Amino acid sequence: MRAEEVLPDAADSVVRDGVTVRKGTVGAFLANALAWGAPQLDAAGRAAIERDLADSLPALRALRFFEVLEIRDPALRAFVAACQ
Image (cartoon, rainbow, N blue to C red; front, side, top):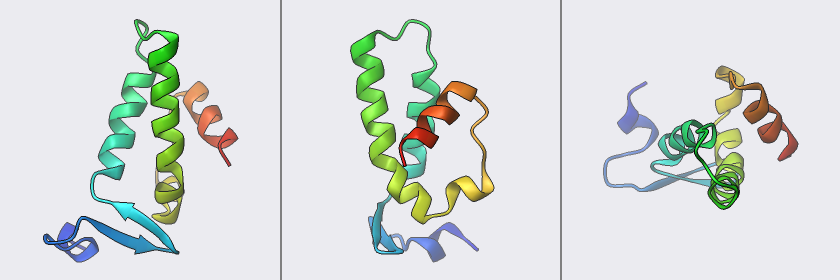
């Protein structure tokens, strides 16, 4: 399957299992996951990233993202699991 078959070029979102998934959701999650583990991140920055991560989870679950990919960082994996 090609990217444009999942989300046509003219579209900025798709509905999966009743959840609207915006273009860029997976990329934003990956960027936030990498930033979340940065040692220089302060508490406010971590809290903002955690909100963004948590907000993306319904869409990622609708895409069945975590059925294919596993989070390697144990602390981040626990955070995501706690956001049920």
